Amino acid sequence: MVIRALFFALLLSFLPQSFPGETADLKASENILSIEDLPPFGWETDANISPGNKDVEFDPYRAGFTLNYRDKALPYELFSVFVLPGDHLEFTLGEGEPDEILLASRDVAYRMQNGKSWVLYAPAETGIYNVDFIRVRNNDRIRVQLFVMVPHDEIRNGYLNGYRIGSYPTTPLNENPNYLPPRGFIEVTPENRHRRVSPHFTLGQFLCKQEGGFPKYVVLQERLLLQLEHILEEANNLGYNASTFHVMSGYRTPWYNQRIGNGRYSRHIYGDAADIFIDTGNGMMDDLNGDGVVDRKDAKILFDLVDQIQREADESYRQGGLGLYGPRPWRGPFIHVDGRGHYARWSLD
Ligand SMILES: [Ca+2]
Image (cartoon, rainbow, N blue to C red; front, side):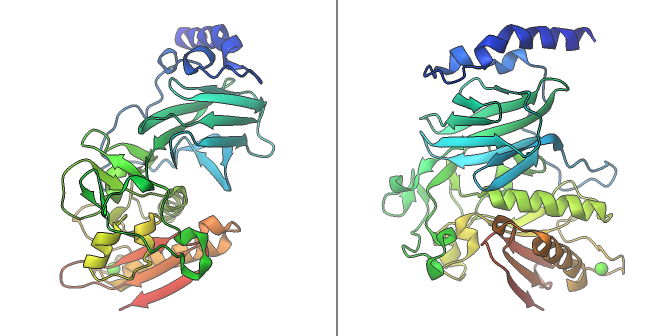
C-alpha cells in the first residue's frame, strides 16, 4: 500500500514533465518519466526461456489496453518494433481505449499529439530502447522495445561487420512489397541474445544457424511475433501446454538460405517465417495427440490450428504461408508459418 502510494506520488510529481503537448523541446531527459522511478515491471531480466514447462499455467501477458502501430494492433505487455535510426514512429490508442495513458522512457524522445497518439523519435545509435505506456489508474503497462537496427546499405561485399549476409533479390516477387530487401538488421551480441522480443520469445531463438562469431545480425518482423504469440496462446487454450515454441529455423541470411538449397524468395530471409514445433522435453515435437508416436499427425494438429487462426484474421499481416512437414530420421515433424500477407498452403509427407 505504501509502495503504491509512493508510486502515485512519484508519478504525480512527474506529470507536468510527462505531458509536453506540442512543445518542440524533445530532449529525452527533460520531458519524459524516468524508468528508474517506476516499480519493477518483471521484464527487466533477460532470462532465457525454457523450451516448455507443463507445470506452469500459461499467461498470454495481454495488456489491459491495445496500442496501434502502423497497420498492427499490439495487445501484449511486452513487444518490440524494429526501426532505423531517426525513424518517426506513431503509436495510437485502440478505439474506445481509456486515454489516461502516460509514456515513460529514459532514452526516447517523443511528441504527444493528443491524449491518444504519440510520435516517437528513434535514437541515432544502434541498440535497444524501452518505452513504457502506462495506465495510471491501475498500472497496466505495455513496454515497447525499440530495436534500432543497422541500415541495409552498410553491407559491404555481402558482409555486415564481418557477418556474412549475402545479397537479397533486388526485385520483389510479384511486386509484393513484403519481398523488398529488409531496411535494416538487428545487431545480436552475447549480452542481448536472450532478450525477450515478446512475452514468450527471445531474440536468440530466431538467429540464423550459420557459423560465425558475434556480432551476428538478424531480421525479424513484428507480424511474425504477433502470429507466434497468438498461435502459442491458442495452443495452450487447447491444452497443449508450452511456454514457447521450439524455433527450428527462424531468420536465414540469403547466403545461408542459398547454401542449404532453399528457394531464392524464402520468407526466412525476410524475417517473418519460422519452422516450429511444441517441445516440452526432448528437442523434438511432443506427442500432441497422445497416440504413443510422434509423426505428422502431431504436426497436423498445429497446422490446423494455424490454418484456422489465419482464416479468421481480417488483417493481411496475420495471413501468410503454412507448411506441414513429416518426420525424417534426423528430425521430428514440424510446421512452417510465415507472414507473407496472403494464404499459401503446402504439405510434405
Ligand atoms: Ca502422436
